Image 1 (cartoon, rainbow, N blue to C red):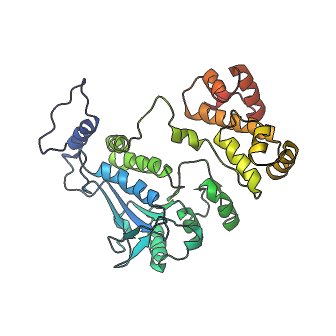
Image 2 (cartoon, one colour):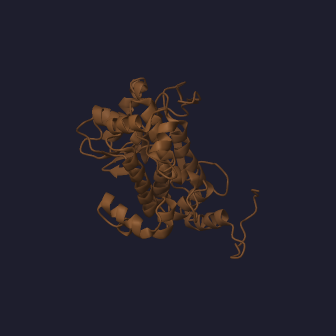
Image 3 (cartoon, rainbow, N blue to C red):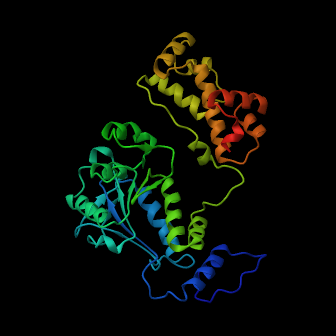
Length: 351
C-alpha cells in the first residue's frame, strides 16, 4: 500500500527493497530538485510496431522516474511524437496516439525509432524520417528497436557501424544492406551515436543499462526489481526457450522435424521417431533431411544437444556434470569430448 508517510528506517531483518532504493535516491536528489529529468526519451512509432517494444521502453522508465509505485514522469520522461491527431496502429491492432508534437530533438537524451512489419516500413509519415535525420545531425543518439535498424540503415545512419538484428530478420537485413555488418547474438549494440536492439525482452536489458548510466544504479535496481527481472537460482522456462534457434526450410515435413528436435533440445528423440511423426520412412527422411539441412538427422540431434549445452555453460551456474546429464550425456567426460570436437575448446573455456 502506498501512503504519504515519511519512509521509516528499514530493518535488516525485514527488508523493503523498493523503499530502501527510494531512500537512497531521495538523499541523492536533495541537492538537485530543480534540474531537468535525468533521462528523457523521444519515441517515433512506425505502423504495425510491436507493442512489447513500446512497453519495454516505457515501463522501466516509469519505475525509475518516481518513488515507490507512483508513475509520475519526474526524473525520467518520455514522449510519443507526431503531428496533431496522429496515431500509429500496433501489430496487435491497438491504436496509440502521439502525445507530443515534434519536439526539438536536443531536448532528449535519445530518440527511439520502433519499426513495424517490413512491408510497412515506408508507410510512416515522411516527417518521422525528416525528424530522425535532423536528430542524428544534431548529434542526439538514435535507437533503432526491432526493425528500427532497417529504418536507420535506409536513412544511411548505420554506415561504418555494426547493428543488432533479430535472427528472424537476419536474411532480410543481409539482402537489403549487404555492406552493413550486423549481429544476431547480442541484446543490444551501442556504436558511435547509434544503438540497435532486436526487440523482445532485449529492450529491457538496454533500458536497464541506460537508466543505470543516467539515473544511477539504485534506479536501475528498482526498475529491475519492479519488472521481476530478479536473480534466480535456476533458469526459467523462458530462458530455456531462448536456447532454441529454429531453422527454416521449404519442405514442411523437414520443418516439422527440425522444430520437434529443437523444441526438445535434441533429448529423448531419435531419427526413427521423428521420421514416423512426420509421415516418412527412415530412409526417405534421412535423404530429405540431408538435402535440406546439410547433415544427417542423427548429427543434427547431437549438434542440437551440444548447442543447448553451450548455452547452459555460458548462461547458467550449473556444474559441468549437471549440464552433461541435462543434455543427455552419461557423464561430463563424454560431454567434454563431444563439445571439444564441435567447438574446438573444452566447455569450461566458454564459462
